[in-house]
Amino acid sequence: MERATFRKHERLTGRLRIHEVATTGRSVFEPPLKLVGKLMELPTTAPAQVAFAIPKRYMKLAVQRNRMRRLLREAYRLNKQAYHERLKTSGKQCAWLFIYQGRTPLTLADTQLKISRSLDRWLERHG
Image (cartoon, rainbow, N blue to C red; front, side, top):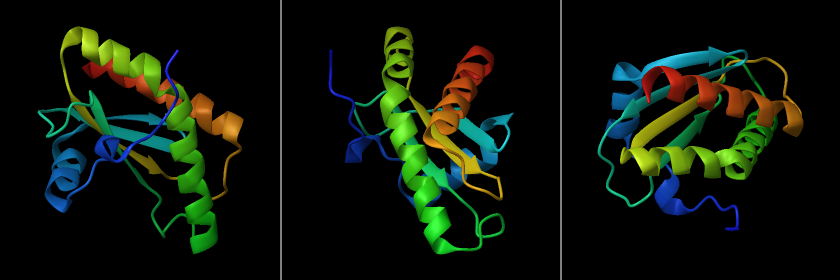
């Protein structure tokens, strides 16, 4: 079994690429989490690249936004292996953008549940 990691080449970076995913990607809403994704060629060997956004509109305090971002990254890191395998077997690459739209922070268990549900739904519909 592989170690669960979240490395630099798995992060979705670049203003243009994030803007493209946000504007032309397809979304799934699993309250309070919105997942926007797009099947596209990525400049990496990873099957998926991911970014996390917590708008100031929903969480005013930077401390809360940073904690929620950390929880989202951790939940994704622990659950990504199955989704990467599905993308590898189909030979596709995908860019995902998770947008947290809640006003209060979630627990790690709730965050893991929301991320896995939203990824399952997105891959069923669009993957």
